[in-house]
Figure 1 (spheres, rainbow, N blue to C red):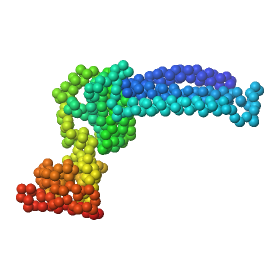
Figure 2: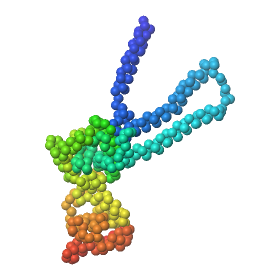
Figure 3: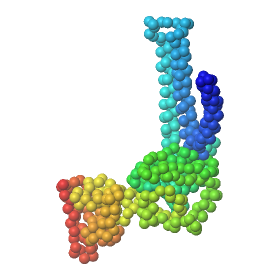
Figure 4: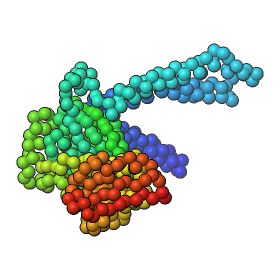
Length: 411
């Protein structure tokens, strides 16, 4: 009785495997294969590279697996037909096959990698729209400045003078140039239908050149963990025709419902604060120098830019006189707020120092922009630590009475 029950259970289990297998295959057939069937030519070439590389590797993997199973069966302990040769240890023909086949595949993969690495370099402007259409030399790519925020994406269209949050709209059939940076931590900009992922890093700019070949709605996200809101750091990507893109730009510029107005530095500082699941936001206008300030890490009022600090470093630094300027580069959440608070209401000495430093950075020996003082007459003394200090600087050029001397310490 027990044996019959066991057999029936086994039959039921075996019969259940068939629909389970079919349902699994059905689920796999519904998988999104956007990486292998994207909407952009660059992504398509990358997908083809994956397929070709896999096929080349399978040329050696499949025979090795097949021969392993064959040898295990043919030379099993119970076999009566296999030849037993315990003294055999070498075959020149077999050695040639074993080493020549992988070597040829490695050569092919190396050549393929070398060519594709240069052709698909994200910094390289694309030379074709699709395999049949080349990019004309006078074609101007659409520039989109991308900023990874916590935890959302900011897209600035400098040519159109507008910006969006968590919404990327591009025209199909036009070369695209993305300039990518981050506001705080490293992220990764990735639209599978467009091209491969490119890292976004604070204080640095990466680039991506690509094109969309067909219209449609796709998705993009961050492919690099960046904090608690990382999983919701996604944005919609729409590829539209050239006419529809022009209409979309006109609607955003016209304002209306859902429009957030103008994106200036003050608005950006509020937008930069961490937030999750942010809906799409549109700005009808954007400050022309906002992206450069984000990249230079000096959006906050009174904060010293990286380029200014590097200009000072290249000329020898400022010694102890530049301590405040170094503090202005603090970008952590505590140091940045402290410096912003101090510089928002600077005293007279701080204003003089800031004006003096900016005059040095801009290599202007005349008046500084706020006309509070003039730059040192001799800039050569800023070529190394321990050298003579700059000439005394008059704060009021008309009177010539108030003179301030900044000494550079040997320490």
